[in-house]
Image (cartoon, rainbow, N blue to C red; front, side, top):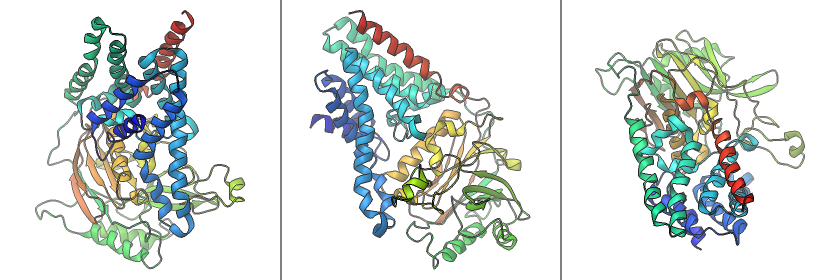
Length: 487
């Protein structure tokens, strides 16, 4: 029961609750009771409790079409919690074999969290370090990334527990300073100037359009024109402040329309005319050479479809089915697919030139979960543009956790982000991850906001990514192994 409570406490640290002190207590509790007697069972219980409680939103996509997919919902949550819990169980077992106590568990748990982020296309949702959102330590991700912060957090908590278990007063004092040192380092990094320019009256204005097209009705033929008319009306609306100028860019969410955007010039003209003759960025589905793509396109003021980005990190069993041709014979198909084997991935991360708004780094929905999906290999972008349809995630934890991870991507790169969600939360986020303005979940409307500035230089994490964590874990693992074998 104590293991379940520790998992629940850690889950409470994630959005939308943000109870980070409770999360820290949960981790301290795990380190305090860690032993080599039942590591696999303990790790599985703790991990399954954490993931089962923090990922409850995973049932929501199956409830959109209850008649077809509703029966899968409980199995999806149980299997996901157990599968991810098994990964943590491996960490507990490895730490028990190393006989390195809580510090060994901290290293092993951090290592499998890195593995979780990349294995089988990766699933880094609710990484341990995300409990620090809205606190000073979160700013450290611009320097050491989310996995570096996870390791630092685990070690800062495990070290004093190790000292206490060894009844070492000499070691306990210094180790108790590790967590305050982590907070202080975050305050120092967060205090550094991150803007090369300030937000001025000349900064470009973006309009975020949120139609609130519920997932159950989004593709209903009777509702498709209703939602399209709503998008048009919100785009054409006068600014809420009569003294404010019209926006320089209008943005619609992921898969905003169900019409053939590329094949209809009249449709494109209707959209840009409603926007007042300014560019419009919007999500849509397209087909090319027999393949389907989940895309983000930019319409010029003349209605031409210019810059385009095809989503490259697709959702397994949502937008595509691994081994689709084989599994389809068993009746297993994706939830959002438009063809038997779903969408095809785009070529990879890129940036879009948007005139006076500079270079935008596009992300479509789930891609904001992955820091690597922001690495274009080209010139540093000026801002991040995420379009998403969070109607799949329900109305409780999922949309807020997705927003939280988007905010962390902004901090990692010290870039502002404009996030436009079909049902919310749409938001303008600055380079420190702060939400400057937003449209709430489950509301329709628009938001005009000036684009915040970016930091002048690339961050340390933006340059290196997660690669430094590999030698770090090899070094720490090697030291623990040497200690184990030398006994």
